[in-house]
Image (cartoon, rainbow, N blue to C red; front, side):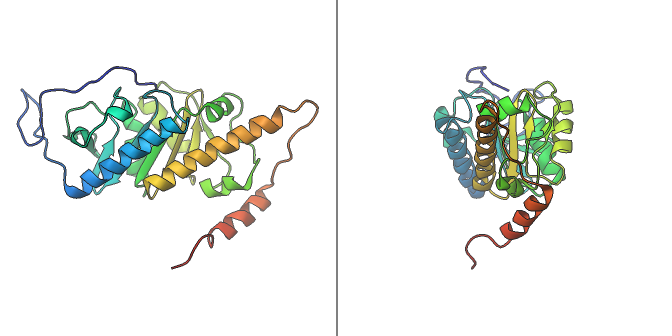
Length: 243
């Protein structure tokens, strides 16, 4: 969802103080949460500078223990400061900060409740969103689909911020670390913010590749088979430097 609601900083519930009637007591961020917030803000800003979102559309989260730090609703990422840390419990109750969490909080929490993910990146990347309007699954145009667990599915459309969208997303994510959201965008998760972001960038690139190849008149792109993708998945298990 494009969260263009302006700066929603509040006055109640200042960390460590009692808010107004019915306001929970919100605590001060711990050192590890402060460090994670810094990384989250840097990742969110990267989604803008690298063209994966426009304005404050999309959102990013990271899990620290049982707390989920999330980008707030409607605040430009270049205006976020260390004091703006926004965090909720796995039950959605806000425990850190006074800014309103992203409206897509149900999707983020659904991922953390059902997987071992520690970071989630949601974008409105243009090529991926375009593909989400055309197919129910991204065709196997490149072997990097194996890095996301297999063919990338498209979650059926549902209103942003809804439990229905979160449920559709979870079905599309079964045995996967990324999916497309129909007429909406992308969602990926990982063990780190860097990994979740890289998966988002790879997904957008694959979508751009397929759209480009499919646009040549009179020709259709060659696609990989399931067997070929499985072979790549096996090779990827040993990819990279070894300690």
